[in-house]
Length: 258
Image 1 (spheres, rainbow, N blue to C red):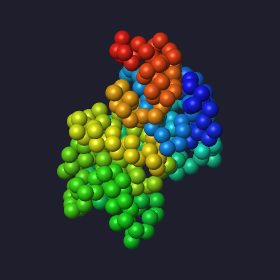
Image 2: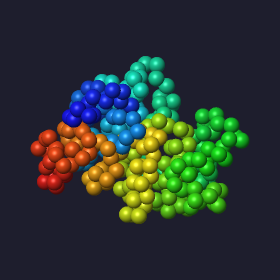
Image 3: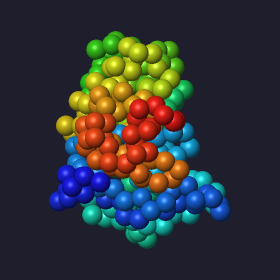
Image 4: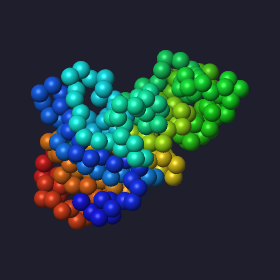
């Protein structure tokens, strides 16, 4: 691993010897990684290698899976999120997630964005500003500001995904996890989401799982290559793509397998 990543003085996310089992099957093996603040970190690797399982550890989404067991530590701003005193609801507010397929709630555009803030006690008189701010941050306000009461499901696929990003932003997270957010989108929508992610890193720490290596090269500052539940290599994206230290990383990037 490169010194630039390993020697981050105060990483936003610090993962130490993370192991995960689904029943008897071990899905993650001794993962250690330092993720800097206000950066985009891309996770690449073939299907089934542990990428999505890993990011679900960062907001404890795997808690919802029966017979899932986690060992090791995940520290966010120095606090172990697997500690006994952690409020998981608050954790998932701080660490938002955007999924592979857009999943708007079956309600209006406005109510999709307002749902989380309402749940967390935001004053009714402040909701309009919160909704507008989130939609502006997700580069969607100018397209839909005149139809906020329309069903969210009436939006195009790309708009729905940006709506889901806005819904995540509305509860003011510090970290955003993206699990293949553009795999179901057309090239134009994909480009808009990529531009948005690069813009959002000014205010958020972003971790993205992607099968698209060109996407990882375009938008990320750091890249981790996963293979069979192990983190094979992690470093600055330019180094990973142009001068990988591991043969299996080079083989994957050059298309010899995967």
